Image 1 (cartoon, rainbow, N blue to C red):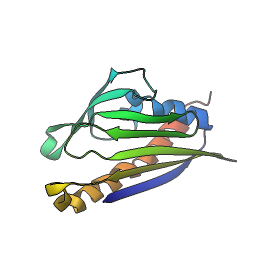
Image 2 (cartoon, helix red, strand yellow):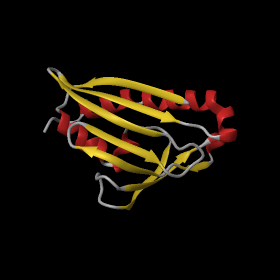
Image 3 (cartoon, rainbow, N blue to C red):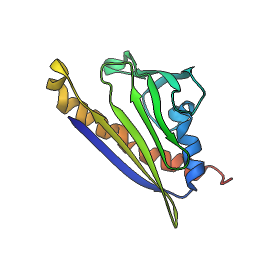
Image 4 (cartoon, one colour):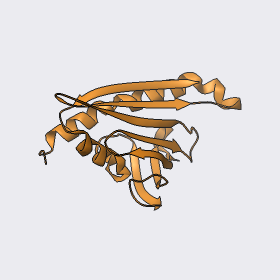
Length: 147
């Protein structure tokens, strides 16, 4: 199993952070490697919403990375499952209110099966890089005017 997590304190209230995160169309603003993203099914930002996503893979080749929101608790938690692509981790954003803002934890977990188990080191490294992009989210949100 591969697991990675990272957390940051964002100087914004929990609902502002949640509203930004739950809209999958905002992902290109803070995550590298997203070539395209669109809502494929369901209502945007709700449980059951499916986003069709194309990522830059090895050697720049496009890779599917579609995901479905599996849990959405306003101001507190967003969970998702990748449903297309070579690796299909589950993950989530977990928010908690603090005096200076909102603590956000981004976690990813992947249970490789069969041959993919041999790629565990590569997957682990990739997942660590993905969750570390939470630092970019912090910068993006804190540079926006507070509402």
